[in-house]
Image 1 (cartoon, rainbow over the protein chains, first blue to last red):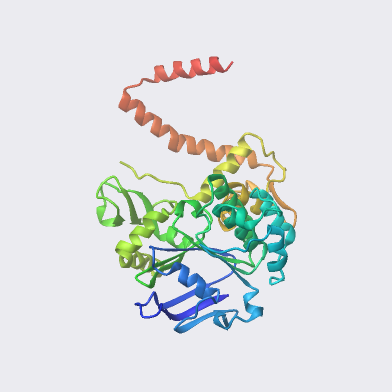
Image 2: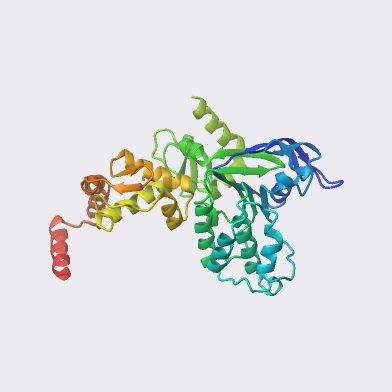
Length: 280
Length: 122
């Protein structure tokens, strides 16, 4: 659905934020986009939404560049940004003005979600707290029913019950026609939702795999006392959590935090062990 | 020491089904929640929920009526009972035996603790 080819991007006179990025996003998936601070996650999302333009390379939605900002392409994307300015309107007015840009917008869904988040259409947006404003945008983004939904740190600012509500809502929002990309540091909040991992490091993509492939090839758990040669990555020498080649071991749940640290520290070793097993 | 296995999420969903079937919350022949409903209930990606449904379908614990939904099969309860009994004997009991040995707890002690527990329940 959305494909990025040989994309380079830098903010003026600064070193490249993203260089030679190749990624494909397809429907039916929830992608988790991870990277350290300043690795270009938000930049990538803005490029995907046509808010920034690639210096070289391309970013195409349905085969057309998002940087052209064609209305028939932009109606299929919605970005929930990390920080934002919203007009001083009542939520109801905000919906009336903005929903007309999205032909598949569902009013019922929007107001149901608002209610679930404890907000009322008569609330004035500027008087809401940061977390509440974020909820307005999340609800609006989901209700637009765009095939591509981009979310930058959506759980930042949400209170504890809302995080669970958010997961429920997202679990019900994804279907075969939708592609959702979520960038986050809050791995624990979203771990059960995503089914594909993209990790950015050093302005490059250093992992782009479905969780299924990862759990087929890697094993996550306590560092074993014997067979230390199987250990691909470990946080501390003994007793800590470790990543091993799975081999004949039972499938384990992926420890995303450990995977992330592993890819940052020992990326090549991890990708090699996945490649060697999938090709074996 | 053995590995610490944190179970894959789809198997934890399978366990959630097992429990509902064993406690008869979901009876044989009864319709169970849809993939989407289960995904929402446990807050997971629907693809993960589908994996759990497929696993249970392969074991013939549930079956799919096209266009209507998933149902507990007529032999669902006995199938689950069989699986869980096997799991208890092969995984839970050896752990208990290992601890009994380590803490020098005799079988007689366990037996009287069991009887006491049964009496308290009444």
